[in-house]
Length: 179
Image (cartoon, rainbow, N blue to C red; front, side, top):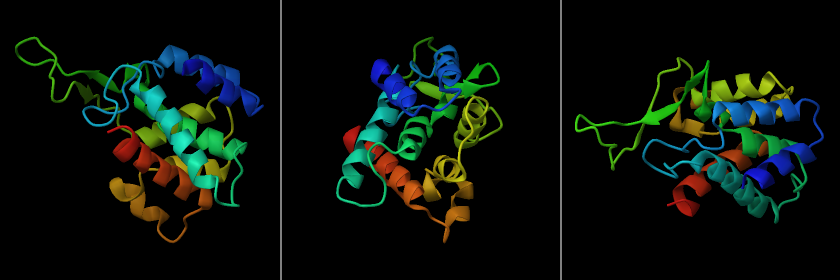
């Protein structure tokens, strides 16, 4: 999975993508869970989820004439929408949920550290240190959770095709594919 993920990012030809890949490696992206207790709450879940979102998006657009499968926008927005879940400022986003007994919780194996920003904002901040996101890519990453976040209502009436594809692919991957 890691090899495929990296090859897709490199295929964009964007200057700075190699340094972003290095940060993902050093920041724990490839080993982080995708959630604290829901979809892919296991080691490596974030990497798997990111590829699932991309694959669902490819299936969605196969019947549309809006975005092509080799679209740099699609690769960047799908694969990097949850980068902030690896953490920031030298801190991981997810840490093991250790109970008073000393065991890891089976119902909620991870808890999030409070980094002061939402993961989608950290995603944009992290990615922009290495490559310059386009406005459409940034919008798709920022609002990929739709109305599931407090600022999700800000996108109402300003939806873009890329945002809608990433949002629906993310929901489909996390709610259907990864159940």
